[in-house]
Length: 110
Ligand SMILES: N=c1c2ncn([C@@H]3O[C@H](COP(=O)(O)OP(=O)(O)OP(=O)(O)O)[C@@H](O)[C@H]3O)c2ncn1[C@@H]1O[C@H](COP(=O)(O)O)[C@@H](O)[C@H]1O
Image (cartoon, rainbow, N blue to C red):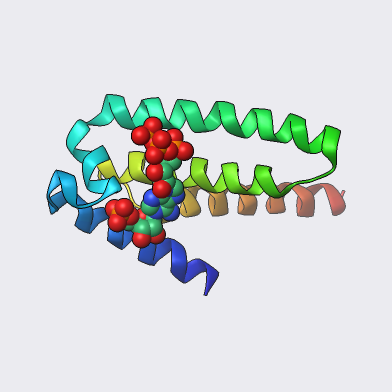
């Protein structure tokens, strides 16, 4: 279910590339172009940092979860705009995880 939502969201973001600008938020971002999308990624990054600091002070992590979802969402729009799907990022994370797994195995066998 959770892996599926990433693939389904990515498919929706792709479809929005061909939608009318005023028909959806994502279509409007694609139409405005990469600079607008990067501006949103920057804004959401800052909001996520502030929410992380606030979570430490208040003990309430709900805003941090909400802002991180906004940040992930806008990075997915950025990747989609550049014709990169989420699988490319998941593959890169898997590659690093497998590399570090091999490092751990090597150090354990010494
Ligand atoms: N996951 C999201 C999602 N997360 C956040 N957002 C939007 O991202 C924006 C967050 O930016 P801000 O908080 O700065 O809000 P804002 O003031 O409206 O934005 P700006 O006018 O400053 O650009 C809000 O408009 C949110 O509605 C999202 N919009 C869409 N999705 C998904 O994308 C799919 C396609 O969306 P549409 O293209 O709108 O149909 C939807 O079905 C959802 O699954």
